[in-house]
Length: 222
Ligand SMILES: [Zn+2]
Image 1 (tube, rainbow, N blue to C red):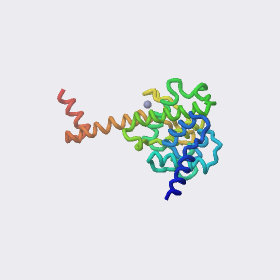
Image 2: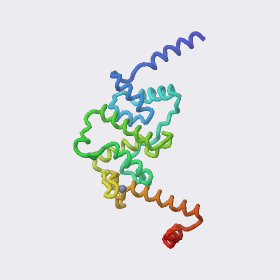
Image 3: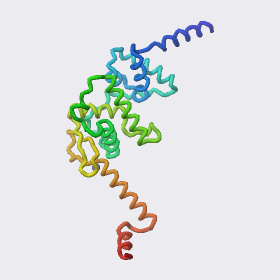
């Protein structure tokens, strides 16, 4: 029994060993693993030379210590050239929100592309993503665009495989992959149009009329 306790202590002490020398990177790591547990993505965002297995173990330990489940995605990760990448209108709407937050008023110009500092680049991605999630979702687990998708998307913009357009109607920036055969249309306008139409339909249903009849009776009454 006492031997088990001693072993537990030894393990616990070893658990506390940091992965990074710099405490700022330790802090970033703690936040990052709440957003993604994909080893490859963590490696590329932090630039760590820690071996994948050690990184995986460290992530698993810390996530377990937070009382959360490990949710490590399988497969090779996402690609902005894949057909299904942000293919749904609602996903494009969220992507537009993220791109507007990420690039701000100046858009993806030369200045915003100069991300030579890994730490600053990661801080920005974490900040933008958390802001997006808290602005659009009450429950963070409901966010349609994952942190990984967002990171891949910005890589696509930087590599000029994903275009950033500015809508003539609402001035939103939105993204469109060059591989897509479909003409770019603003997802923000499309979603808002849909919600106007659906609320018109709902109102018409409540009134027990078709929308056109409703309009007609209003017009004839005036
Ligand atoms: Zn628009």
